[in-house]
Image 1: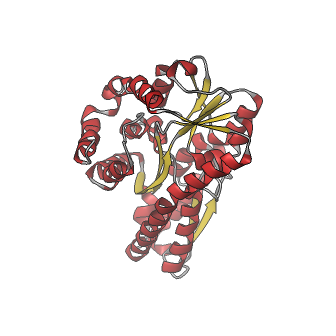
Image 2: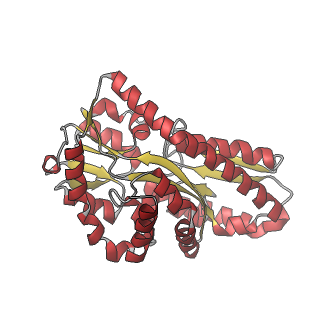
Image 3: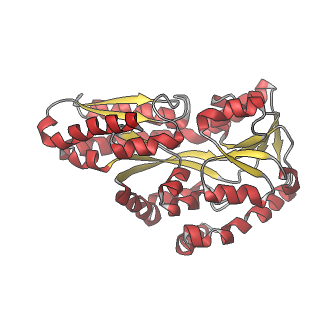
Length: 333
């Protein structure tokens, strides 16, 4: 905490200087918790490249991947204090921050496909969600895709009953806790950087993640099975400290917004390919058996998990859930 406060004070002094420092190089520390090889990692690196290019070097972006600066639970506080200027946390992180509406992204099987997901993120719903972050001193800049989740475990999880008693890692989210309990599993909240070791030592039996995260973190090397459930979604919000963002000269902000839009297109375009490539690499490794659920098995999973929607209506907001369901209906679901 002292370290965060010290860094935050230093950043606050820089922010207070505002226009006086406009002619000097502006440094943006961009921290994230995954490897540079993931879609998020590549998106952050692309933003760095474009931001420095479009501002003619007036902005320098320092990317810190793989929890080099902060772990999951620390990074949002660091951003609010001004110790870092930019993050790309999972959407699940905003519920514990007090913006529960973002936990709608954690609801199992709420997005039938990417078309509906993108309509939600890029339309009025996504904009309104970002506006709710401003009271926390945060500005939302973009939604970055990762993909739909799979389960990994040392047990072949084919049907809901198979989950009973399994200790499964989740991100900090009341919705994800309810999801695991609906299956009879025991949810274990844990920082992303700690998951591999927890799986290796048996502290947890398994977890949920996207194939690209499973592969780049080598989770498949310490898990016997990968179950292609596609039950949930992992996405990110690229965010910045509001005081920092508002202090930037307008021309710099415009160029950074341009860089962010292009980096977003880049990150989202490669997300599906990265997951497909990861699945192929996991299969080729021979260390993990990939289980593809039958239509009947997938239907049983959906039936077991859709109870979470009703349970979470009061927490997430029925109006928000209805808006997403409306997008699904418009898409023919």
